[in-house]
Image 1 (cartoon, rainbow, N blue to C red):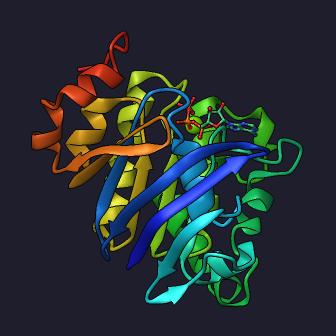
Image 2: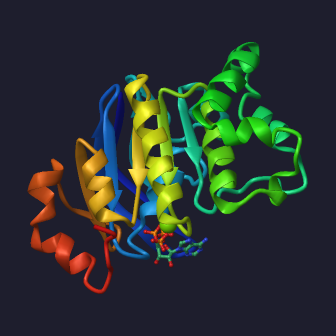
Length: 238
Ligand SMILES: Nc1ncnc2c1ncn2[C@@H]1O[C@H](COP(=O)(O)OP(=O)(O)OP(=O)(O)O)[C@@H](O)[C@H]1O
Ligand SMILES: [Mg+2]
C-alpha cells in the first residue's frame, strides 16, 4: 500500500533523514523505533505530507505523492496523529473531531465516523461539548486519534501516542490501536515503549541518526545489538 523509497528530509541546511526505505502493506501494523532525535517524527511528518521530501519517493497505491500538497496525502487515505497531539485547546472536542473530516468524502460520513470514534473511546462521547484543553492528557490523546480516524484513513500514522500518559491509560490506548488495526486500518506507530510496541507490531524498523539500521519481525529485532545500543539508558515498562 505505502512505499517509501530512499526518502530524504531535513530542516534548513541540516538533513535529518538519509535514504530511508520502508513499506507497509494493507492492514499491517508496523512500528518505528529509535532514540530521541533519530528522525522518527521527521519520517512520519514527511509520510503525512507535512514536511517536504528532499529526495526519494513516497508512493501510495502505486501513485506518487512525493511532491503533492498535504491534502492529497489525506485524500489518498493517510492520516496522522502528530507528536504532542496538536488539538485546538479552545475549541470543543466535537469541533476538533470534525476538523478531521473536512475532505468531501469524509464529510459525507461524518456522523457515522463520530459514532465510531465515540464507541472506540466512550470517554470522548461524554466530553463532546467540552473545550479540548479542559480534558486530561489521556482524553486529549483519544481526541487526537479520533480526529485522525474522522478522515476514514486506510493508513494511520501515530507519533508517540503514549507519551506522558499513565500506564493504565497507555494500555487502553494500545487496545484501541489494536482494535482500529483489526478493523482493517494499517498503522505506522512511532513508540518509545519498545516492549509494548514490539508486542503490538507485526514488523518494526529501527532508526538511528536518520537511517534505518535494522528491520524485521519483533522477535528478531528484540535481541539485535542495534536496539540495545539505541535504548541504552531507556527503561521499557516490561
Ligand atoms: N523543526 C526543526 N528544525 C530544525 N531541526 C529539527 C526540527 N525538528 C527536528 N529537528 C532535528 O532533526 C533531527 C530528527 O528529529 P526528530 O524530531 O525527527 O526525531 P525523533 O526521532 O522524533 O525524536 P524524539 O524521540 O525526541 O521525538 C534531530 O536532530 C532534531 O534536532
Ligand atoms: Mg519525535
